[in-house]
Amino acid sequence: MEDVIFLIRGNRNGEPFAAEMYQGGEQPYFTLRWQEDEGELHIRIIPKDFDEYGNPVGELTLESVSMAFPWSCRGGREPEQIFMNGYQSWTDSHEHTIAEKEHTISGLASGMVQRYFLDRYGDVNFTMKPKGAGQFHGFTYCYFRDGIQYRFLGSLSERDGFTIFYYNGSAQQMTIEKDCAGIKINSEWNAFDLVELDGTQDQVFDTYFEKMNIPKPSCVPMTGYTSWYNHYQNITEKIIMDNLEHIHKMGQMYDVFQIDDGYQTYVGDWLDVDEKKFPEGLEPVVGRIHEYGMKAGLWLSPFVCEKESECFRKHKDWLVKGENGEPVCGGSNWSTFYALNLELPEVREHLRAVFRQILDVWKFDLVKLDFLYAVCLQPTEHKTRGQLMCEAMDFLREIVGDKLILGCGVPLGPAFGKVDYCRIGPDVGLDWDGSPREKLLHRERVSTKNTIGNTIYRRQLNGRAFWNDPDVYLLRDDNIKLSPKQRLLLAQINGLFGGLLFTSDDIGQYDQEKIKLQQTLPELHDIPCQVERNGRYTIVRYDGQDGERILRIRL
Image 1: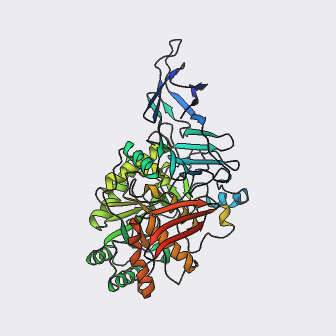
Image 2 (image 1 turned 45 degrees about the vertical axis):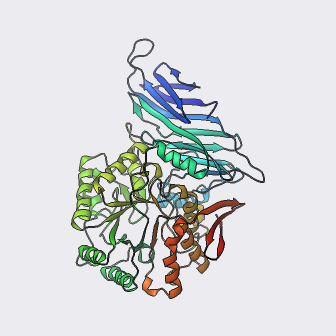
Image 3 (image 1 turned 135 degrees about the horizontal axis):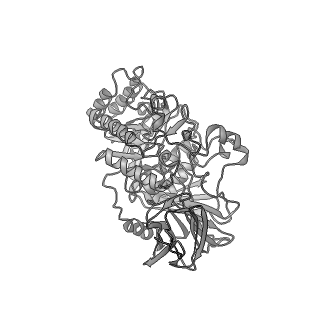
């Protein structure tokens, strides 16, 4: 990073101030400390006790903090590839060239966005919208790839605010912004902790996680079953037990059997098991899972409750409130859902009780924790979105203890080193890429095509930040619109790049060909692969039993 311009805007007691600086130094209300060391750049804003006239400075309110510098990127016939890590698990994230455009919500979809709160799932409410080809943005890290050589920029910490990278290919300029609008500071504040690296894929990503002191996951890759992508919320004890028995009778030994959404009465009422669906509760199911030698997993979304839940009706005081004083809606799933305020001690105690019941009484071994982004929808004057999210992940790790966490719907930086497994793409669909209308929507929408892209282009996190969950593979012939070729491709990509291999198929319906294919998927995990782009196609090459195999995916 050379020729860096640091920009800050804010106010002190309502009086605006702005500064443009090229290195550390003094300003009327603060000192900027600037430290560079071995590719790292650390910038601190230190408010002064008194201004130049001897008046107490007091709190400073930051409106924007950013830095800009020249950053070249080659176009033409052999262009460099640009990767910007999307906001959260589901945000589509893959390589582009400067001739391409980043997907944004179409103006034609404004009615649907408003009706279904589709602007809540991603970052559209607090980031700048790209205006054309060659303009991209991402969170926490990005890279520019020329063949096997990477130029990498990354944030070493998101605890004081999300780090947002904006690249403008026309201007050949990088801008890095700290998401901190409205934060009040009265002591030393970490503006940026950045690192710039050059080298091969392994060199830059190994060094990145070493600099963050994040050890490799202590757990191992796993296989498993989840009920969602076949039955969705329409599960019962019989459906779950039937699938469990089929797995056992087929002699298939999964590592995990996960009960997904649908066991509870309402989202948010996690301990109110639907007696019509599970008249004996969940403990007998967990017992049978353990009897068959598998870990028992349970899905929940700890930071939200839906409008029809008892949690929402009885505890509106637990909800995050917006600037208008109304509860903050996190999205349109279920009867619409709202974010719980984790800053409240009573909310934390409620969640401690929930997890004690699930882990210690019901004896689940793994929890899939979903829609986690909701906890940081509304920053406060003393905590940024990034700080709220990082503290929430600390809390989850604390209360889950030694049991396993599968994170989902979460900004990835705060999840590094905090979860054992993590979703790194959107939900797989029963078709390839949705309807033409759905393609106009948010970057977090359900899409098999997009999740394959994320699985490929977030592969570097696998085994470093956590084990990647690429979502399920589906081989079945019923209740599916994916073609046989698409189903095979999904399974191969998950096998090559995933650390968690889940399916929702009833394997009692598998023929011998599907059984054989399924059993070979874990073997793909350790096979070296080459990934390249040719126009709009992503090419994956690896050595199969019958020679080199080539997978071509248009993303």
